[in-house]
Length: 546
Image 1: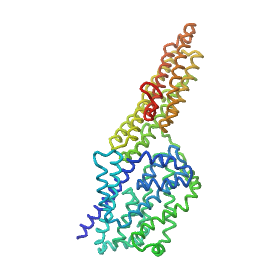
Image 2: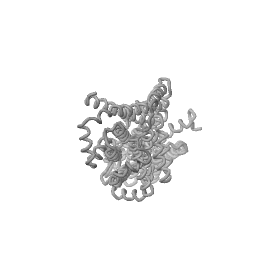
Image 3: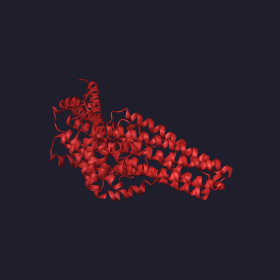
Image 4: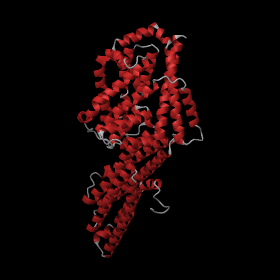
């Protein structure tokens, strides 16, 4: 076999390894994405439980990058504190080493069995979750098959004089070797794949054990790059997680590199098999980091909070911030991104609604043009979120993800309608000021009271959307009747003032009634967020709450 043919077969085998890993990761996240988010969200009460949850989730998805994106998303939303998030990341790195340990064993027949089982589970008549589980099993079989092919293909390469000289020169330059492995890991988005590739080369005799150890350190460093890039635009809370994990790895590399010469003898006491040496070193590296840094994550969190300060520049521009295109093929991550963007949209509507109170209370219209222009941002975010979520829904998703798509589309639609109503309402208030007419004292107090109730219930609606809390959803629906009754009472009060001939009431009657009507419409859109959640929980009859 020529060197060119061997190289092409090697490239194809590595590509098969990466594709198998991608199938495992996407299959698991699509099948159990919601459950994984719940596991991580609940298991962060202390450092130890957060560390263990990081191990568990990464063992399932076989990707510390995926775990990092989930955790940074939680941190950015304030769901998880920074020390717990850093502990989860240390656990995630342990998870990748345990996966590598399992895949390093000689499983001769297992690839073919897994491919067959995966094909059966992925049959057309299976449920969505079963099909995705079959996808993951099929991918695992491809990974094991690819590893066997890499070992077979790399064996002839060890006789190549050119390759021996290249690897010898790289081995004599530790920094270059580490940077090369880090670059390959960044490109492949998988430290696990690169560690397994290095293991296969060592088994085939293509590279020395000393060089393999350097490449493993480089793979660990390169594994932190994709999460860092993905969170650069996601605010200081998310970036502290990914940069903090990178800091752990850099310190680990500084500690280990001077002692690499002692590692073959030390680890050889456990097993002298090249495959075992590589994965055992990978495990030792990450377990050492966990042993050192899990007790120190509170200190590390304080350091990174000082290093990465909150951004001073405004983030209130019209462009989406969190709709990550790279997450489209992983619905659970994509929907988390969309949820964060919906939060920005809701905050914009909240700002507009609070602006109505300012206009009513102080007759201050200095910023009203800016408030009206915020509706353009609401419209833009609505279009972008709708397009993004629609593309996510075209993936093969389970019922929980499908339900979440519906919730996002319904809530954003109602927010967009609210923005339009508030824009019209602000315009009407501006026209009133030009006519130099004022509401009666009693009427103004009623309008302000009702508007404050809308602001309070919008905050409640946002919490319901993020948490899916059924009790809060029931509370919001019940509050709808009280607000409608309040609005009806205010209408009646206004009519009574008209009968009494109050000059202010007569002058502003048409506008006053329009404002009350618009406030009721806004509240109807606010309460709409509760219906999908209550319907899924079986808490709705056809016409009213159970």
